[in-house]
Amino acid sequence: MKSDLFASENLAQPAAAPGMSLQNAKSVKYTVNGEMLARQGSMVAFRGNLQFERKGQGIGGMLKRAVTGEGLALMSVRGQGEAWFAHQAGNCFVIDFEPGDALTINGRNVLCFDATLSYEIKMVKGAGMTGGGLFNSVFTGTGKLAVVCEGNPIIIPVTSQSPVYVDTDAVVGWSAQLETGLHRSQSIGSMIRGGSGEAVQLMLRGEGFVIVRPSEHTETAAAH
Image 1 (cartoon, rainbow, N blue to C red):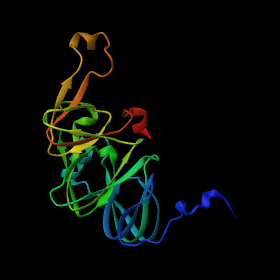
Image 2 (image 1 turned 90 degrees about the vertical axis):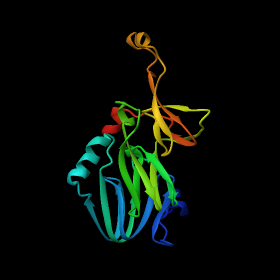
Image 3 (image 1 turned 90 degrees about the horizontal axis):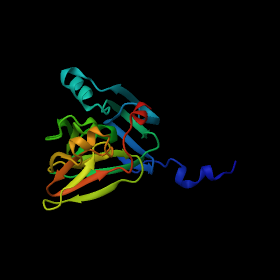
């Protein structure tokens, strides 16, 4: 049987080492030897002796699940084997954390991560009630995190002299040390008359970067 379908870049290769790697631009392969964590429902295939369990919720876990609003509902994957993760054919990126690194990521963009990483749901300071921008996940520690993004992300440097304003429905994440706040780009009168649809943005100031996706999050997309 012959087809471009069977091109070498599409074939799953034997694992070179335990841990996370890109299978291709749209999926992540994880060679499990112990435990890792992933977004619920993101596993698309596996082989070997693996067990998938909903992450225990408890009081704190229930709060984490409830306040994200964007679905950082996690599952643990334990055992020995290989698993592949993806979400709605979004583009996947692997971020390697070193000691001292801290990254704020929107829950809807988390795909999977090493159990050695710590994560905490935090309210975005100064952001008020701003839809997807209210609570985000702050990752710290040492290990790898896979994020998923609709389209190719835009990485914008942020400086103290040049703050960046981002649509709260388009933001993927930012350097955790950045100062956050809300910026209103329309007058109240303009908003009452309908405005431009871009009334409020998340302001980021300090030294770091922000990750933006080239599309706005919609309720329709979130439902699938």
